[in-house]
Amino acid sequence: MVNKMSYFNLENAKPGDEVYVIYRNPHVPSVANVKAAEIVQHPKDPNSLALFLNDTFHVIEDDDALFTSSESAHMAYEEHFFNFGEE
Image (tube, rainbow, N blue to C red):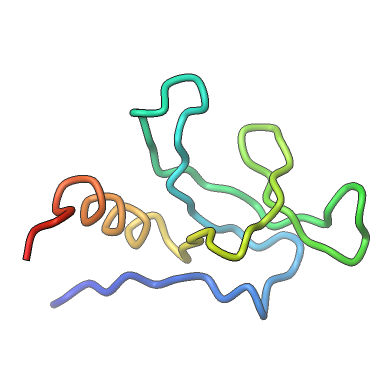
């Protein structure tokens, strides 16, 4: 069986949805991990959503990759960090 990465569709996002992200450590930029995050109401903009990750709110950017499962995020992590540039 071939696993396929499954990205989270932000168009259908609602508060309480769980997503998975590849999160770079801001103190050690060479370190990245797959982390679970929650979609929440933006604390300062009631018309927007945010990510709640590591006890912090994060604005969701257009180029953020959000995954529906830990497995999908780990596949993307492996592909990006270990197979980068391979054909």
